[in-house]
Length: 507
Figure (cartoon, rainbow, N blue to C red):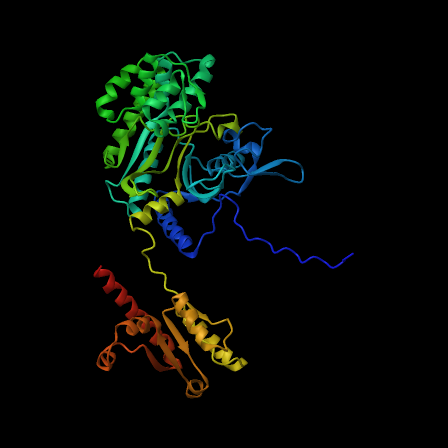
């Protein structure tokens, strides 16, 4: 019998489904974008808050299904005292928990913003990830819809701060109370109709996916999809269906406002919702935000099971080309609304709240389409090459590197196998380094360095055809005293920046 140990299997490197690695370019783009968002929020008087990635599962509340399935929709585990904890599903439920837990110390209205990753234990697909970033802003403790109006104005200002011009976006505003009034007006009020109302809300939520015809089927007898699967409908009659579709089909609020007010006139909640919409519309208009920026639009049907009053959505209206080569409108990049019930779950008393969330990855894609992201220059580091490995030489190379860094210049000393000098220049080329610093024994004895302009070197190699051209061009390598190292590198980097600016102006 062969007791020889089996060779251990090599571990396969694989990324979990629904997750992505983020490269330096993506990270810098997100940092650039979130810095601009943060600046707008700060100007509005909002303060940052950070909550942990994990919350007790029951604190996530209505985002979760049955309590006996704590891993449905969220990633969960049990801690050492057997309590279920879950990775946060969004940034709003943790805020509600934080406010409730610190209610006596918090100054109301509480205005805060948060950015961070959220996690969904759902089937991943194209553009649908299990981990993604959101950037939220919320006002807790402000009952008036002027707080909702301010959120809409802040969304508009944020998009413009990111370089999205007017005409390429619109903030659309609706009110859940108006829909409640419509449902009551068609006979679906009262606790005994709660189940049917929920089915109507779920049907309306499919408007973008199935269109008015598909929603009409879901409001009525039901709908069969392409595979033959049948979804039972809400059981409304044709008159009821027509009134619901009228409400969600309104495109011009000014034209339809009178008919909508008439439809909900007999319902206190519906009339209150119409009044709130009119108040928001008037307030934002007086503040200088016309319908080209903020628009009352009853077709907004986001989060109908969750929001309790105004709902709003930031939509980008320009065309992009999808993966099939088709021109499509980019669509929503964020939204929110009033959620007066969420904090109250912990408090046993009413705590009004409103806020919105930006989908960072989706908005970043939009900004890249517009050429508004990644425009800020990230200069790769100057490379200090290594010619000798003794401690004195190494110390001098490191000192040069530190001098460049102290002057605010990105720099690195080569840390690989220094004995093959050609590999160092190949490394610099692949890395995109703008300048290489070279000092061998002879240069060190004279107290000088060779400074190689790698960007100019590349350009010259393709453009210089004769000695006369070479003499007229900027020299790609020069010798300078060690004491002038920083000044010479700055000079070369400035010349390279001027070249890029000139090239950019000629595009």
